[in-house]
Image (cartoon, rainbow over all chains, first blue to last red; front, side, top):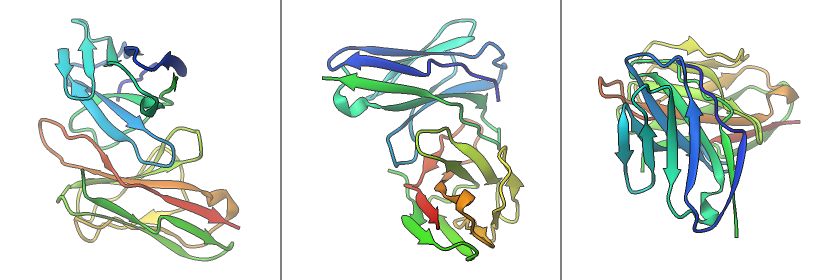
Length: 110
Length: 114
């Protein structure tokens, strides 16, 4: 898996859009970018996955520039319940060994 | 929601006891994983399997062992529990497809060894 770098923590306010950027300079041609969300005392939950350009689902958007050396997870109009740790993973689809980094601890304030 | 189950949810046990943490999934996923996570810390991969009769060690050295006799079942065993084994253990599974499949996690087992 390619190494990733994310901010350790971020604070934002309810109703704001939050963007979390992940750097992955060594991304390989067949690597996908996947984001997970983890609440305390629970397992991580899949949010979104993409390969290039933009992907959007009911929860978030994922922006990937043409060089794919970074990606940005965008959470629209966050609420207190979005307070969680967000992990960016980069790897090939057939990777058997899925390694999580430290993630970004997002704290939403009222 | 994915159907992956871990039991027990909480376990408090004395030093030296043998324990088995259960993990089952009903999705027919080939790949299964065990992660260890201390409160507020990152997840560490301790074991994984890409199918029946396959098991591999992860990045974090662990005294636990696993088995994969059936597709749906991936139990983790500690032969002799120690206080250093106190942690949360998370099981996950995924398909093995060309298009990729995200990990589906259980709710974890929080183990305390006294």
